[in-house]
Length: 114
Length: 115
Image (cartoon, rainbow over all chains, first blue to last red; front, top):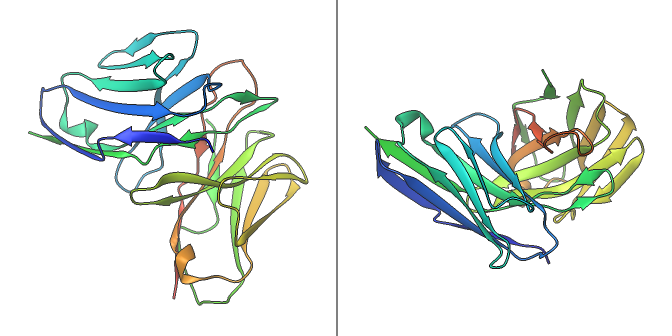
């Protein structure tokens, strides 16, 4: 079935360093790839997303890249800050009528140390 | 501001009990989803609904059922709770269509413990 693999499961960086989280997906028809951030005790929230017609998207310190041929996409966080510490989830989906069924990765726990 | 609420933040039930988890959204969205979140497994889709009285199985529907009698309310039912259903349950509701993102607005979650 459809699957999304996410690596690494944990990531520890020093404040100011960059962090990269990678995901691969199995369904070649997937066309939408969001990233969610979940802070401790809070609900997941969308931080950035990318559609299959775009190779890269950037929003301030975060960026996402997509390689459709290899079926993988990555989240890049530059100049990390302690408030970036959270669990990050990637997801993949394809449009199906009026709804979008997301397949999530297992999550990456990012710790940014001052 | 989209609001998705869940009836309980914490719930403790005994094995074999019937459990109801309620989710309400106030944005008139057609779609509503139930996920469970477990460490190392991410968010897994249990059931979703794309309209009143319409439902579809997700990836892990066994042991669960759902009810959508009104557009704003989507209930997850554990017919006979078991210890392996101890988990965090998240409800989500996204807008429909190509107008923007397909952002899933999540509820605060219900941490269910089955003893």
